[in-house]
Length: 229
Image 1 (tube, rainbow, N blue to C red):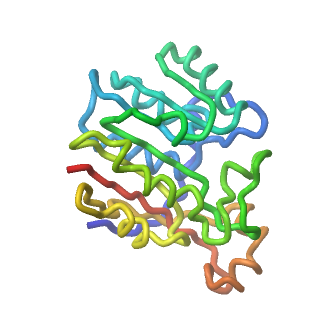
Image 2 (image 1 turned 60 degrees about the vertical axis):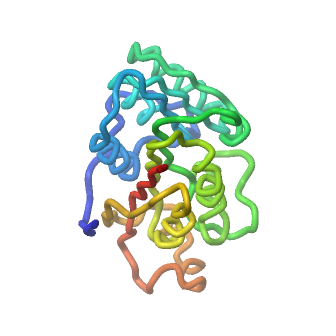
């Protein structure tokens, strides 16, 4: 079960540095961190963060003793996460590249993902620049669907995937894609946050696509929790 609440919390930077163009922790990061706090794990847990950005969530897991691998397609994000690991004196293995390629053959007890999920014009998401941290194709699902397809191979029995994304992308579709013979999935949290500058800049396009109502001012964020049997 989950309920929708309105959220206007501050960005959970907590002193993290970020190179120009690296996605800074925002409401979705905080929501995912709260979901992470509800999980039971610690020393001996092998964890993966997909799209680590500043490394905020990877460091949160490492602070509880997990062995964390963090991956990002942006070299600036990789350098930022490594810097924050040194500053926090917490061990992280930070790797550059596509998450599927860099994790092939590995399984984890915990996978955390805050993927790009903002619907955007254009069939393909950007290959460079800061927009690659949030633009994810016309329905916002380019990366979400890849994570859903990869999850059964990434998780050990009993392993958990936590993923945050916008309600515009279709929470029910994500749950359906993650539910199967080896996995169960559900929405565990919903919050509403004020529209930011990215959504406001493409309001007309979102309305034409039927992804937003006229004069919409709040965006729903959802936490999807999937567990491997």
